[in-house]
Amino acid sequence: MNKRTTYYLLLVATVVGFYLFDEYYKSPETIKIEKEAELPKETTNEFYLPTSTTGQVIHHGHYSLSYNEDHEQAEWVAYELKKHHLARHDHERPYFEVDKAVKTKAAHWRNYKNSGYDRGHLCPAGDRRFSEQAYEETFLTSNISPQEHAFNAGVWNRLEQKVRYWASRYDGVYVVTGGVLKKGLKTIGDDHVSVPRQFYKILLDNSGGDTKMIAFLLPHQDSNRPLYEFVVSVDKIEEMTGIDFFPQLDDEKEERLEGSDSYKGWSFR
Image 1 (cartoon, rainbow, N blue to C red):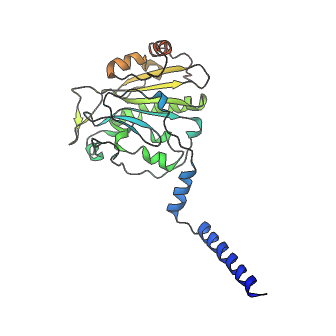
Image 2 (cartoon, rainbow, N blue to C red):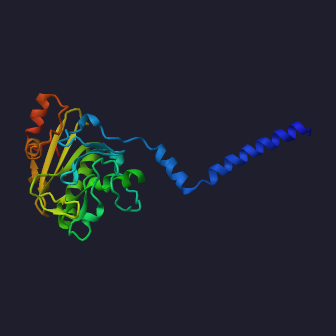
Image 3 (cartoon, rainbow, N blue to C red):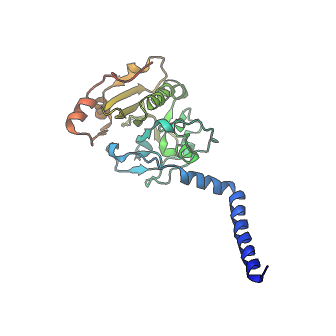
């Protein structure tokens, strides 16, 4: 074997060695970053975004929101929940973090400490288990609102589970949710985070080619009443909040869908 052949073989062995080292000795952090990079970008469909009464709309990787500084929480959070999002990965529950994307400064999680209220998710962590990044994003303080524990773990949780059922049945729904924010609400913490008296959730589905819509308005208290008893028109929630939820729809369709309080076409099994 001549020197040139020996040099070539050593070069090949060195390259292969570096490749194997890179593949088999990656740090957990590197593996996590690469796995996240492989995931499809699930940004909110901005065509369906509501109007903002505050002008402070923030787009995170897996949901969008309009932050209301006067009430120190989002006036709405919007996201798509698709069938393939309904994974059951058990991610480690992270700490809540202040949302640094809020220019007026989001409320601190310490406002909720010893307040008697849960840090109630608006975009539920359970809707974002398909990736660790998406899951952790729901623990930003801009995505929470003070909720009584019985409400959060009771009727509100029932509604969240029903939304997941519809997302699976109709292969995806568009969700807008938040508390009804108005003057004179009770507040908690040094940042004076408002405690809504009512919470709403609005769903739009156009997977079958025929757009349908349903809206819920829940008093901030637990209830054993069936969920369909909380169905209201989108128009009613718009009157209460000042938000135009689907301004992109053509006027005839918007008027017809938002003016109805029917739940026809939505299965309440």
